[in-house]
Length: 397
Image (cartoon, one colour):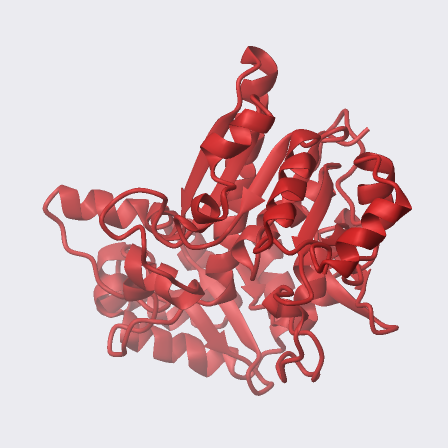
């Protein structure tokens, strides 16, 4: 069995952060029922000319493994039907702007009336409370608000815009919080409302910098630098845009590196006599290392440096990740059906359990409303006549 087998999620999430949360939970075994409508399908279902194709941008990356139903929640009967779904679920997940679910009549207080121990998960830009809870936001804003963007980038350049890394980080944090709430529910029989603020997730990723500032320190964008280590960063190799990551953290690693690279004269250079001096003169040191690395094959150099105890690796691009044997064998990268007759690589759950079945994606990307026979018919025990009537009234639409 998978860790969350037997758990059912009524999934009202949209876009990326919320759907990635439920996508992770579905890989752990939860039955995830994605709620959409033909009037307002998930925006990621729509064609968008990115990621090398003119089809749905990344819907299969966050929706494979899920069941799909149509439901018009702007209709009073749609709201009632949504509550019936929640009543047979363990988790209700949403990622609208704060207050939207309350206005629909599907806020936590309302859902508790139909399922007293429901775990509701709300993912939003700034949380459900506070003076800025009404702010809408997308991934680049999460990183900007949370301070992560300001600390990302080169020292002589602007802050970096953080995109999908923020959506997926928020989703993974939300999935962890959901598991914690389910654990509490099993122990106490009580449900809860899990409130995830995306900007706070960004801030949680820069805890060391927040600590430094609180102690009176100063932080700035470092680019590929480190506060202490040198050489440290990405160095060019013999192929364009193929980079070698090197991080020398001790005197032993320093001496081993320069001997391996044929840079032994640097040992006696007073500019590099110790860690403090190397860091102070890191630009000159980077130049010497780059002059060596630019003649090297990245893969061969990384393997050789690792063999002598120097931390180094090729800086993987997306092609490397998708085709990496290690990630493939562990199920960290998997192929999913893209609903267009092809397959695409997707991110698997980043964890393994010694006494549970491995997390996995067991089905392809669902077509809109593909599983209504099971959800409305078998799960909610509605007759075909009832279903057809709701379709005619555009409740199921």
